[in-house]
Length: 480
Image (cartoon, rainbow, N blue to C red; front, side, top):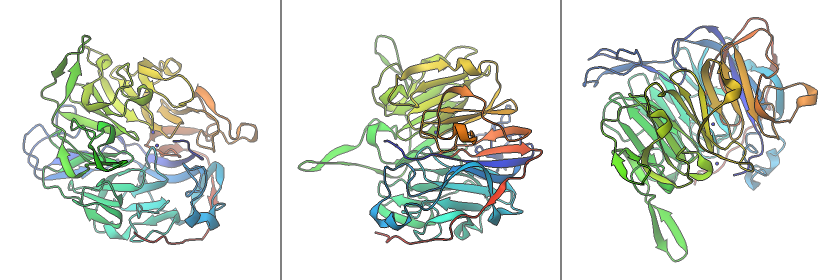
């Protein structure tokens, strides 16, 4: 949940039935082995060549509120190519439904901490996309901006269980553990073995290892995790964010620095810890259970409930009490004690969160970069005693699904993403976690990853949101 951003927004889905798993965490049903004792979707047998992933069991209806000017989101002004559409889209201060989704049951909604596009996955495993599309990140074979959710025909033959959004690229995971990628590929972030400006149609990544079970996207890089707990990365190596002990910089010619990008998935092989006296020790036998990416940093959670972080160290987002970049995964000390392990991890644009195994929420980094940073994990005292279900990070705003409520905060200006749609509160920030003005009698189940809006899954007993008809305008950009 990358620079000054212009607008924020929020997407919500309404739940009709409970799901036992996070919508963004598909469960692996391995044909060659049984599941682990924790039921976390990881096989206990070493062989998992055949796998069938299952998405969330939730069934919901998509609601949207927040900013919808896709070309302006995250920017100070609209690019010249889109100047004619600078006023296209508005801030939605209350929940709205898309008329085109009438009767469509939503399983998962996805965005990214620096994305201006969004995705949804239906209960049938079909992928829909909408928003900014300058690099073909919506996967429709063109660069037309899409105002409302549209079925991705190029993957209609696949059952999609999960997806991830980068700044201008997208990954989609099928039930068989295959990954399709589309959008910008200038840094090799699609894993196709080449570097091109735009890939507007889904293409399968160049990978022939064990089935993939989880994915995450940074701004210009990607992470995938296989069913055996191995982590692979590809894309831009700046700040060491790929975890291969290098930032990939080289001088191409006078006054110009370029990066040696990873064009295909490469395994992250080294995990370390640093002692108080600066000694570096390897951490063996790391089996990755979860992965989350910010703009330029990554978090992983392993089978022993330890948290590792690496990449850009600015604002303390890595949690190591210093702002130094880390080139390989480094152990976050706080979660390496008995009874203090982590159960969930989340990465925002310049911050990180973890939920401890006893339920406490910890934060480090910064959501407002003009204020003091938190250099190491600290408990969020305002949420002490709440049972954290899930959390989503935008550029600077946070929303949490806790118990039966949604709790949000973030600095000004806001554009509806904090779920405060009363007239006096419009545009105001909230510096501490607080209950937003709720949907009538709502029950929060999950909140997914978000960029300038926050995907959530809700059960709503009595609400009839307005149907929003987005502008019927589309235009194309040249594919370079």
